[in-house]
Picture 1 (cartoon, rainbow, N blue to C red):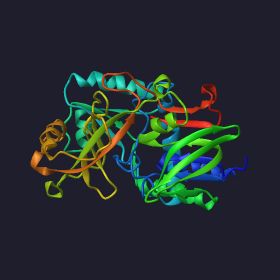
Picture 2 (picture 1 turned 90 degrees about the vertical axis):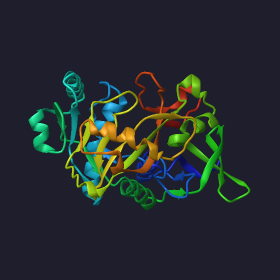
Picture 3 (picture 1 turned 90 degrees about the horizontal axis):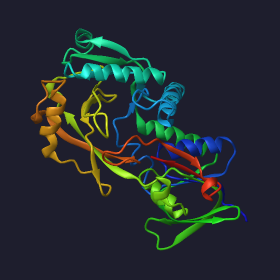
Length: 350
């Protein structure tokens, strides 16, 4: 059959755009379909914009491998393309004597992933961040922050420079396997009819909708372990009048389902706290102002000057997790699906 594209990429978040840029650079004809009115409107933009070092993941996992390789590639891309970033470093702090043993286990696990962490006594933490109160800590020198939207835009620009086409406000509603690839049915916002396009390969980088897209392609998402569990995280911003300035990101010892309510700074120096963890049934981005007391209590363990009256609701994001409450570690899915009867389908899930 005559193909409209060599590859259709579903999703114009950073993963989909990066895939599109790589494929277009290699000479493939690429179409990117995005359901929102602009790129990077979901998981890519609703986060703390932290460049993680690769500290917490199990040795040998894709998360560990890709985080370490990915952050180096990310820093290099930012340098080459003038994307705003800063290697702030991160402090992981123990707020009790009992947590010092946890810090040592974190340091040992990070070392197995090739991530250096410097142990700090309480005085060492205070020297680097005088406002922080802790019994000890770990310094991660490779952690940083980035302008996530500019980073995503750089991939869109690269893809389009190699003739990829990014189609916005267009949602995939059907996928039919063909003898030479797939026929994709997509509905464009404000139009009463759908359009169909044929492609040789399909990349599912649909983020929060990746399990739905996998099901449209004929995969049994429950049997595959691809069913997403939506884990919401809220953020609160600190009033500038408090006068708190942080040079590092500050994290408590991790808790279940997340890394704990931590303190981050953006490229303008604004301090935020979050995210918390709340599994939800659907995508929503409201932030309950009443949570300020809980956030202040959590942040107050290591920044005692923070009070609830200093905090304002900022924004929320959704983690597309493959593990639910109380479940164990689940790795990224990066899989070509020939073994499941869908050759040419590439799943990027979780």
